[in-house]
Image 1 (cartoon, protein in one colour):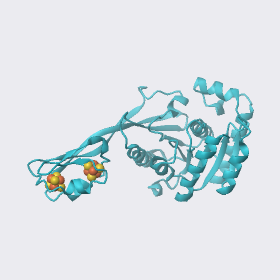
Image 2 (tube, rainbow, N blue to C red):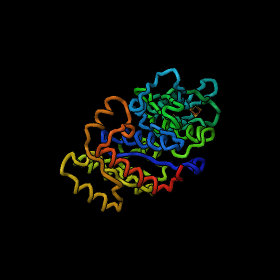
Image 3 (cartoon, helix red, strand yellow):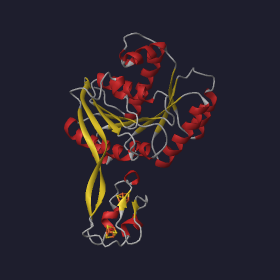
Image 4 (cartoon, rainbow, N blue to C red):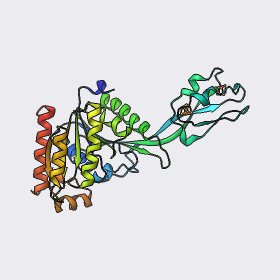
Length: 310
Ligand code: SF4
Ligand code: SF4
């Protein structure tokens, strides 16, 4: 899939742990590059808790937001054609099909992943294609000048979030055909699970946001292991770097994984003020330490990605 986006620079912003400032950094990165004149798509793939739109002052219910429902395949069993052979039940790796002896199969919906294997193994063509809504995607064109936003949201109670992430990736390829993005930034979910792995699969560069705490250290190791397995090109951003004096263990993790710390951002009251107002701090006209540190990180990212000067 990434081949279809090969002429755009792709950055993923991730972090093993929630609450490290990952979304704040992804949003400010996107706004800053858009302001420089690059055409940017920001994808919010934290589908269980998307909130980048809030940081950009947009509501998912605004009139100009294009909402599309995302459905997944769900088997429908035909009692006319079914011979009760049990092959669909045996083939279902998620054990989502319940079938007692001499009975027709039935589906336990929440366990179904929509993989279609049951339909493919049925010898009598007794399984037709139904669908179930599992979430939505939202597209906001020009949320700021040169910046489009694509947000995925999983319906409450649904478990197959990776299908929403896959849908966002497919949609970003379609959008790129129309809008020819220079940069595509993906804000991933926290953690080191398959949603995150899928979102990272697009990236030319992955930025791992962490903080100097034992939790930050623990979860940084987890995400770096995932990155190591997938062979991604990654760097670390140490956010709230003066929160504690627990910086050495983070530097040690970076060194153990042979991954560089791209920069450190100190705690700054102005960032908190802007956050509360829903304003990207990079647009704040004042000079303050966090902004200076962030701008120097952005310069490094630009160099690493060899972004053309606009
Ligand atoms: S679609 Fe896949 S997960 Fe769902 S019932 Fe069929 S085999 Fe099982
Ligand atoms: S595989 Fe087809 S025929 Fe066999 S039990 Fe399932 S639905 Fe019925």
